[in-house]
Length: 290
Ligand code: SAM
Image (cartoon, rainbow, N blue to C red; front, side, top):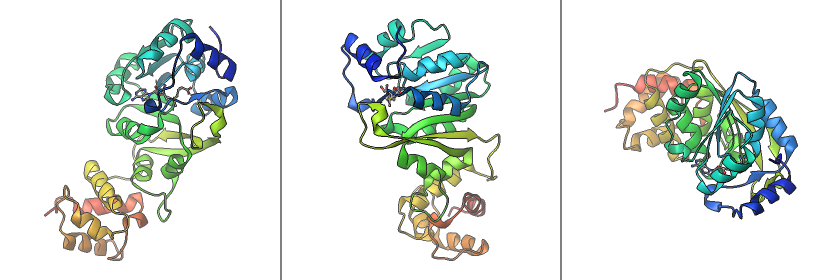
């Protein structure tokens, strides 16, 4: 079994199995061992850890995870990659479970119960970029017990996760991530570190999950509905954004008086509110939907 993480061995594996990259699955494999070592270090993996890897590809990062963690569960959608992983690149490890499934359909809570007795796991992944947001939101919203998520994402998406109010990248993703975790960009990664080269630059971001959210809110789901509606029509005022949102059933007058109660201007836009203010606004609006 060859150690991956360099162009020569990656090409050799791909040729041995006559593997063709599937664009629809966002397949850009890492070919730089320095980057791989930094990701493992940033994730702080040790022999106590159970790690979930999303999209192992040909198993490049998985090899590093298997060396460093107690147990690794890798979920890969592309069935053509499974024989490569099982018979070749991961065949010498006995601490790996490979699931040939779509991560968006896996009951990750059940995996955590079975593999780690329900204790928090670490997620490490070079994510398929076409489904970055649904993957992250799925992990958070299904309340999977999580210690941290260390992921390679598109550079702009990493920036969106960590910015605050008043910046153009601030939005529903920033607020959701910051409600559940503390985001820290670890490094940016140039396109040349992947095969094939993606059209965008990438970044590794670590999300250290909060034991409990930094703000309290009476109805978490309603707060995220309010946040989504506020950013759906970015150029609209908050009053119009929320007043027009079909699912929320909020009267504009009620939104106006809630803003007044909070000491915020009537023409304020969603992009100016902090997470704490969204929580306070939701509490004021809860139970007053009509
Ligand atoms: N971890 C490998 C690496 O770093 O070289 C591959 C990363 S590549 C960016 C993304 C991987 O996710 C691919 O192997 C792709 O087939 C897989 N993938 C794409 N969509 C997926 C899904 N819905 N569920 C599970 N895996 C998926």
